[in-house]
Length: 114
Length: 114
Image (tube, each protein chain N blue to C red):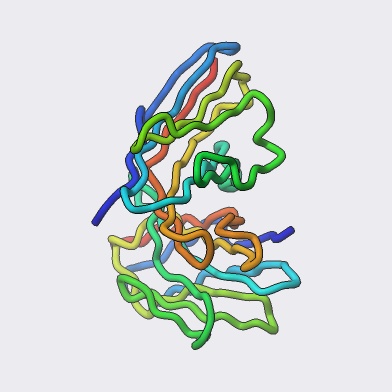
């Protein structure tokens, strides 16, 4: 079975600071990788996904993530955060031989101070 | 953009009562899911559903849970006899394909069992 770890539970940044949120997974097979964001009071929204190909994927709102297979990592980055990025961020994985069933990390709450 | 909608947004029930959580998936999606998040814990997979059958279910999804697609639009999760530990946020999701297809989530139903 897969598992996903997000190392930072809470992150506080000032506007314009750079962001990197860590995500590591454990699974021996081929995976799809996702980052979801949940703004206060809203649903989980897909930020970006990796299925195959270029390990550096770009998502919405200036976010990107890099899949490093050797490190089992899929860290989320943004060069300059805005106050509106305040949200909870979830890394998720699904095994490619297991349909679309997602395993989520514990989430990281990001607060961006204006 | 099409959305997954869930009702109610908040449900309070007494222990032992039955509850039905409702979801309307995106109209051209064929695969449906329920996840839950107990306060302070990870988002956990409960069940996936396709073609009027359960495709996968987790160990959480025991005999007190059931899912149904009673008509062409709704997808429901029933908990027959609620327990205190069923208190959680329940998320419905849908996807277009069975593999390599991102899940689209609803806003969730917060279930409180007293």
